[in-house]
Amino acid sequence: MTRFDSNLESTMVREAVVHLGNIYAWHRRRLSLWFFLVGSVVVLLGLHVVRPDWALLPDFLNGHPGQALLAVFLGALLCEYVDSSLGMGYGTTLTPLLLIAGFEPLQIVPAVLFSEFLSGLAAGALHQRDGNVDLLRDPNARRTALFLTLLSAGGAIAAAVIAISIPRFWFSLAIVTIVLAMGVVTLATLRRRIPYRPGNLIVVGLIAAFNKGLSGGGYGPLVTAGQVVSGMPAKNAVAITSVAEAFTCLGGLGSYLALTGGLDWSLAVPLAAGALLSVPVATITVKRLPETFIRGAVGVVTLMLGLISLAKLIG
Image 1 (tube, rainbow, N blue to C red):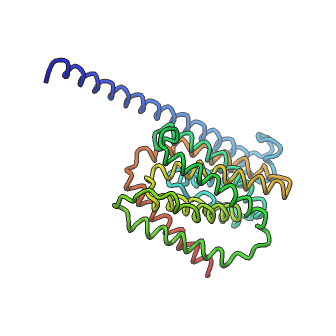
Image 2 (cartoon, rainbow, N blue to C red):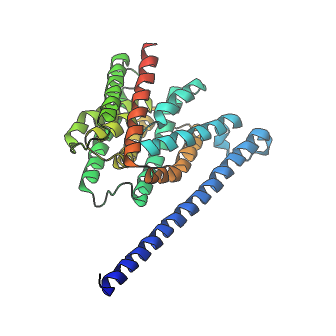
Image 3 (spheres, one colour):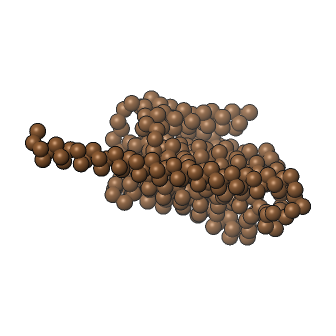
């Protein structure tokens, strides 16, 4: 090896070390800010629980007790962390929890769509920033995101228009069957490299968007697993799902607002705050986890959600 080659190699090593150091410092600053913001919101809502007479919150947030606002914020924080890490689980988990808590469906679905529109945009931007996807230079990723966005917007708008009157059992059973199939195929092909086939996403994208507009959930398991089964790398699939889901939510939300004329801000604001604050940590999680682990987790969680949904449907 010549002296020139040795110097070049040393320079490249130093640059790589500096680059890794910069990434570490950026992630550390992000986590510090995240702890501060989450802690501040929890303290504020906790004070509202202890002393509601202090009027710490805006008037439009006082539609629910402080305990409910704190529970909604923490629930959104946890569910969106899972969603932005695995591409699924926010509306699917949060919507039934809010129903159990006593909120009405027409309160829940628009508020969930609003919060996930904001968090989806933020997740897409941070996934791009953290290198989990490259929508600017990867034509397959960019094409898939645009393709799913267009399909999703149409499906969500159609679903919102007929959400009140459609008989759901057979449609729900079809969705559960597809989710279960996606989970099984994802796990069965865990260590296989599947050729990318965008045509496989047409039916999946339409059905997933329709289900999202109908219930506020069920989009991620279909679209994320569908991309993996179609040959998209798991990290890319998670990031693309966040972007496509944001515009799906925007289409569904616009339809709900046009039909119902309003949004329950006392529910939408804590949901949006919790969802947005989960994103910075979730995209770092995706960055650091191995591709095979994420793909396996997508398969397992998809299969579990399918089995739970099936049990709930026939129970």
